[in-house]
Length: 213
Image 1 (spheres, rainbow, N blue to C red):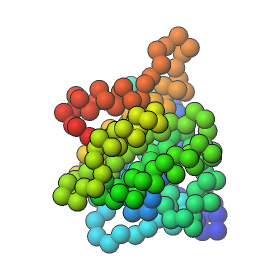
Image 2: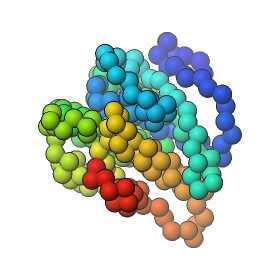
Image 3: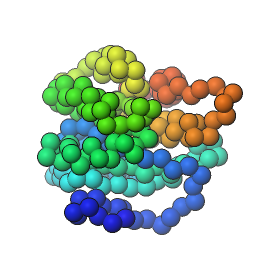
Image 4: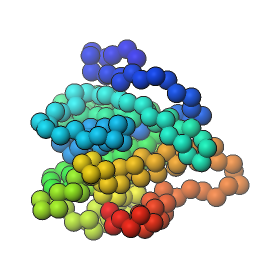
């Protein structure tokens, strides 16, 4: 993919066969762990060490299997800094799903979620799939945002919610696979098939795994 002023970068990998292609954006304040979450899902590794902010937009691809259907997730990692916000806005319209992150150790990142939701309403598609993620759930001693507050905010805005940890991998696979399942069903569902409910699916899967996040 060609770059726009050197801001968009593609992580090129060997192409894989897929049935459905979906664009997923990671958004939220700078430092909430968007890049770490993506790397954990894509490569099952954790980016430890010095924090490096994403500059503009970056993306990686991963093909996952959902009930025999190959779903290609094109995952866009966005910069959270204000100076890159206009660039991020340009990509909202093409997104099929948005993973909106805050850091459970940062009250300000949680308080800013409403502003991010306002941007979503302004720039994204009306039927975009949204999931709220409280990241860094492994940092229990530094927690500043209660899980109940995240649950309430998600319920108030009608979106799915879970807490995640890019460091331990907690709920990372579940978050992306739930999104993949929802998007796959949207694109392949017959008119008479029951509608897939992302919130219910996430709750059921968390209960199965015994995870409270």
